[in-house]
Every structure is written in C-alpha cells, then in structure tokens.
Image (cartoon, rainbow, N blue to C red; front, top):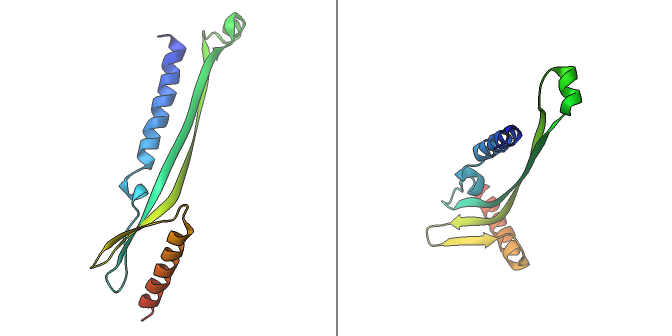
Length: 124
C-alpha cells in the first residue's frame, strides 16, 4: 500500500470512530416519558449517516525542492447525519401500541388524539 493510501485510511478510520461515538441506543429509542396514569411513551427514531473522505499527494519535484519534504499530502473528510422520529411506542397496563408518524395520516391523527389525552391527564 502506498504512503498516501495509509493517510486516507487514517482519515476514514478517524471519521468512522467519531461517528460510532455519536450513536447509542438512546438515539434510536428515546428516553421514556411516563405519564401520571402510568402510560409510558418511547420515541422511535431513524438515524442515517453519510460520509466522504479523500486526499492525495501534491507538489511533485518542484514542491520537494522548495519544501524539502517529499510527497506532501492533503486530505479531508466530511460527514452528515439525520435523526428523524418515525414512531412512538406507547405502553399502558393493558396493551402496547406502535404509532407510526410516517405515511398514513390516520396513524398521525391517532397520535394527536393520544397526545391530547396525555396532556389532559397531566393537568388533572
């Protein structure tokens, strides 16, 4: 493997290491919220990552003569992340319900009704 390829590998390894540190189970299943009547609500999220890295040597003979360093290297990396709520897991004494927030509006309406009921129970 060439010297420059090792540096690109270092950049990618560093980037993926830091991405791993950004996620944990609380990123996918959020912190539970417990209402006064014992209902537990857990937000469920979708996490997406994308990244790119690259680099190369520059300078050639001319660069070596002026700097005294052979094979100067430049590299960069970048990343993006998206966390999007996709559902809510609602646990009561009698049942467990998964309410999807994507697509079907009737499910979103059900969640809005549930949120209203929870809000009313908190104000009692």
